[in-house]
Length: 301
Image (tube, rainbow, N blue to C red; front, top):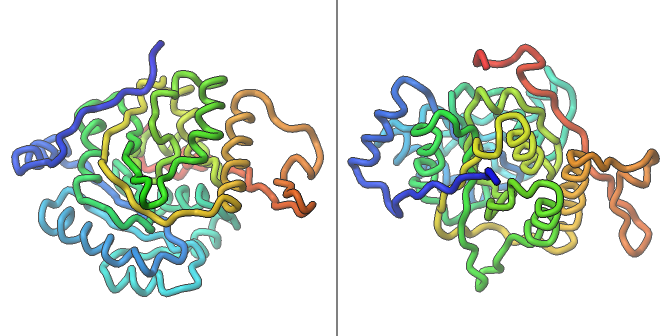
């Protein structure tokens, strides 16, 4: 059975490998996008490393964007001071209507960026290495049939581990409905890269189901072999509570079941997570249409 591909990359890319990467890149452009909400404590160093190592030193990255998703702290000021182009989600909403959620922020970064390849990274990562960007790009630069590259990494248990939503929700549903995707170690990872011509052809689920929605749709449209993964080593980030993960899990599950042909019945109750105390949390299952369908594509694909 065809499935996602794992690309072997060196632990560290030396000068010769970086030179080869730049040769493969040619005149194509690369955008790094950081969707952020209240990441003032971590986003500054992340931006500084990208600017110094990937823009100034090697020239691999052409554009660095922080999408400020209604932060209540100093995220925008810190990001601007560190040298990123900061775009407010509210400015996107003026032209394209109100939205909310992680997928909405990712869709907005695709809309406002220009690169032929887009690399996404969560703004709360504290173990970022410049090689992450290079490794995520390498399979696409080296193989035109690759449309998206996901990170796989190790989350030390002494720092809280991770992957609970993946192993308790995403993987069981992949095994049942989307077995061609089961080779992905971290389908919900926040670090991944995509080919603009592929990304612009896809709708984006606005909530936490965005990653699974993109993967399922790429596999359906381009074949699962268009998805790759590379090992980025260890990853450290903010650890979420079980209660907050329950909403994420519910939205991931709903997205996967919808695409498997099992949408809920009519009625408000199916669009909410109902807690044991009787309170309900609305689920964000709306989608943003593909940029291609809106006539906003920057590519011919």
